[in-house]
Length: 247
Image (cartoon, rainbow, N blue to C red; front, side):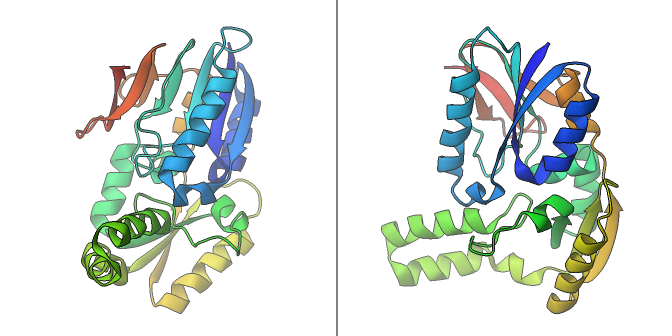
């Protein structure tokens, strides 16, 4: 097969490694993680990539290295060829290798700030700071703007304090080590951030198994959703996270 992979650049090393090892021909396009600040614009960008590559020739399928990501991928439409997306709320599942492992880590300490090498190296100091995971500063910025428009600044401030108050109670920083090259400087940066905020620091071994299967065409229905032409992504509200609906 010939696959087109559209990926967030927090997966850069993992995606290129998996593409190099894949038995298929894989062409990769990376998008800036900072676009998560506005899920609506990110969805539009991903759809533009899908549409520009959604032809029977030269690709057999398009694969997305994204999760639901604040609903950024909800509504993505396959037109002429299949589109495959992992069943994941966010990128942490793809860094840890399974939804089950992420759930265990989250249950152990919900107030966790996650770090990876690519995330730390590719941050733009001019961007609004974003945390990898389900709840990002980008989600907060978008929701806040909507609240201001609907309810005014004072009410928006109060609502955001209630909704995002849990973020004041981070307890742990976790660096996910994918064992790809020397990540010492990234790990030290994560440790420094943890110390600055008074969080305990931990390191977890990463697992790129889901990324490998995504680029190998090993798309079992438990871990991946395949959109057939004419179908789009919809949030499922159950353990499957997403499902396909006819457009």
